[in-house]
Length: 137
Image 1 (cartoon, rainbow, N blue to C red):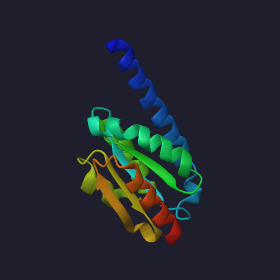
Image 2 (cartoon, rainbow, N blue to C red):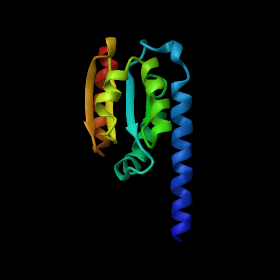
Image 3 (spheres, rainbow, N blue to C red):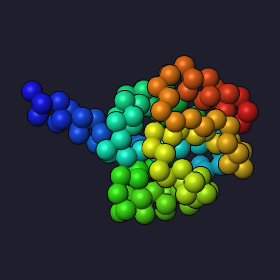
């Protein structure tokens, strides 16, 4: 039973990462849409709890917001996250928050932070933040 639960978590994690990677591909659109940056790690229980909500919101808002998952699980993934953050102009944000897993931030024009939270599992708070960001873009 524990094995099945672990396999489901791993499968969900891979689905989350795949979806996040697909959302991050259109770098050419950078700057045209608000950016939602998610700092996560495989070992972070708060991230695991937040994941289903973010997956749902990524599907709901993926055509209007740019979602970027910044994985800080280990040094190799952190290095990759740093490259991704640099592409989006979020290097300073990642450096300042890399130890704050489950942090979600919404960036507007000129990468201005419009919303930032950590260990927040309130779906409605994210909907409000995303809608506000879209209204300002």
